[in-house]
Image (tube, one colour):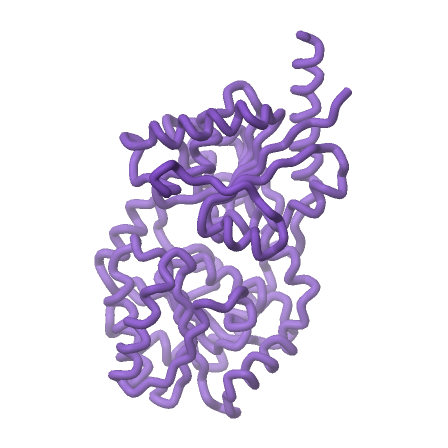
Length: 381
């Protein structure tokens, strides 16, 4: 009997990180022949990791669309991919903004078993209700949320893209990066980690942060990291910082976020899942790194987040972040987050995160489904 054919895909940074986490184990199992397809920005990230994915884009260069009404070209391209590779199973990333490669492949899969690697708890996306047959999610809470929102099956496996953090010496990473930043003892490092430009209110939230830094910690160094989908926004943010007299260090074009996260005393973002990268780094450190402040100070951002089905950013309910719901709260919570009590509380909460990821369970589940299809196909030929 031939080996099962597995088609994998990713279209955004989180999806690329999830796929990278499972690829070594999938290869080592020797139960598949595999083909990886990706669109930007996941394509560049996977290329840089040496994975050599097949590039996906429509004839006009587009890689995603805003709504189902314009998804026909995506579906046609996905059908061609499925026909070209004839997979026995599909394993895709999960992206919440717009529709692209991952969602189109799920819709084009036909009777093939489909699986998805969820990053943000409760997140799923589909064309015409074609959700994956099974979502691999972080924990039981994410599984319940995924099922209640979409009626989709979900299995807790831990945080895949954070599994490699177990090999990191986080205190050494922090010390090395802070030395690179020339941070002297006692100087706060505040990070701003942006989300895609399509999320509204970020510019206002960033200005609220800059005002808070000048009020609460005027000598702080701000570490800026734009989202890979919109790095061109970095220059405008740097101009805002310069105008306020705040020193900044732009890391938008650095390959990995982890060194810069580890260097921060406070990480700020609207509701990016980069906050969970910081949480899992904190969990690997014997001593506290710092804390997170979510910048929900712009009404447009709060409305957008709630329309996406999120009552609060991931981790808030378990102590992994403080939510600033107004400009005045940004300054108050930044002051709190820079305090020792907040750092210790955040560290304690981070140590309660899932300690490991069950990647073997993913390999086994996907392999069994693919092999079952091979047997069915073989029996009918």
